Amino acid sequence: GAVVSQHPSWVICKSGTSVKIECRSLDFQATTMFWYRQFPKQSLMLMATSNEGSKATYEQGVEKDKFLINHASLTLSTLTVTSAHPEDSSFYICSARDQGTHSPLHFGNGTRLTVT
Amino acid sequence: DAKTTQPTSMDCAEGRAANLPCNHSTISGNEYVYWYRQIHSQGPQYIIHGLKNNETNEMASLIITEDRKSSTLILPHATLRDTAVYYCIADNTGNQFYFGTGTSLTVIP
Image 1 (cartoon, each protein chain N blue to C red):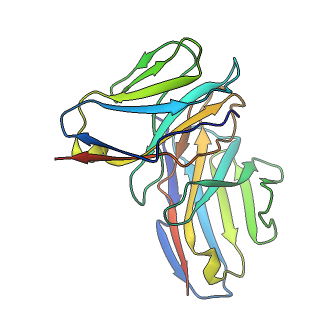
Image 2: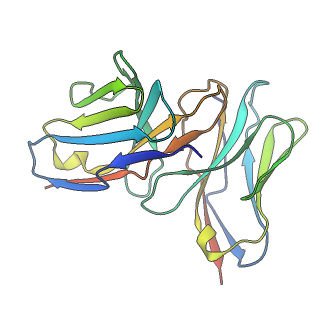
Image 3: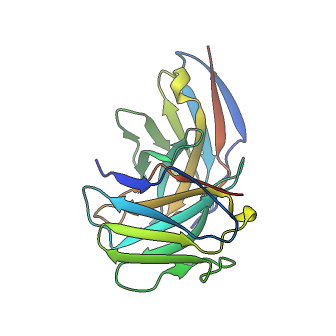
């Protein structure tokens, strides 16, 4: 089945630094990938849609200059949290869809970001 | 996407069938129903999806009412490893999914 790999699985960084999270589709190509954020005891919230070869589309209220998304190839999207602050600490999850309009989204195992 | 509503939490005895309901009364004709589950600190895991016919796979069965306004996910023989939050999503875009609050299922020994 379709596998989405996310790296790192957890990261701790100091306030003011930037952190990059990678999302890879291992056995399929994905022109579109999706980034979610999840705070403790809450549901997943869509942050942005990552489009291969073009700009990402951000959900309302998500700062595009803070959460930089790059989708340089059909198997890799990256999310960079710039100038991280403690309130950015969260669980970040990416997903992608294999071929087929109504095929299901497959999710990575998430990245736990802690900003100190 | 149609809004979905699910009970906040449910319990199920180990070995019994777990029946998780989802209401999607505003679903449109071309929206599929997808089910995912999320075990603590992991990404969501795909379970099953369907349009109007009942579906079954190795993990679960999906029963969709004839009017498509609700559906039920059935885990036929729940185990402790099925304890998770279960999400029901109605979508027709084939693109991003918007998650509701889901049902926290606890399987009791």
